[in-house]
Image (cartoon, rainbow, N blue to C red; front, side):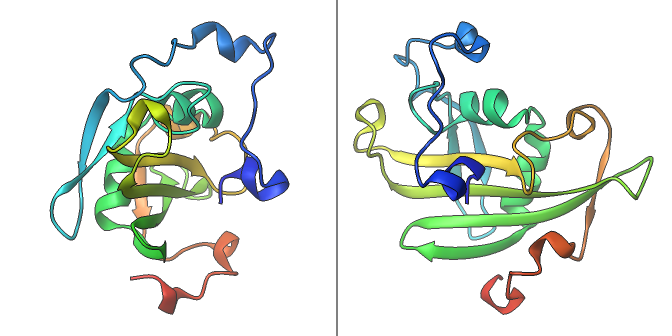
Amino acid sequence: MDPDLSATNQPYTYGSDDPVNESDRTGDDAATVVEQFPLRSGGTTPLREGCSTCNFGLWKINNKHNLYNLNIIAYTVLYGYRANPSPGVYEYLQAFSNVYSSSLQINLLVVSNQNAGFDPRILGLEVGIVTAYCVGVTECPMWVNVVGLRPIATLTSVFSYVNESDWD
């Protein structure tokens, strides 16, 4: 679950004086597809532009979770463990280590919603990638974006609550 939702059951609301709002868009282009990620089951899922008030998409992933490396999102969606917690919603999970220091590891969770949008800006369209974040921290460490990463076959202890038989 998204770190904000897990603590409060409410999406994060950026204050008007929050510097992250300075780079926000009007939301008019929130539905714009910026990337299509292939799915293991065939087809693709979109990553939409999003905005600070949308609670989905690239804007949220970049500005809220400090994740700019789209390659690890693509890898996770294509090869990571997959769960289906509700109809049309998929969670993809993959562990990565830093290629220069195997002691630096992160677990990435990507949430995709193949249902029609609930936000007026994407009403009737597939939502696509809702969010992606490093589990256990609000923001991904900067090294995730700037150095090479190696997928790890086994999920680390952060996922001790996960029954791996629930994931395929």
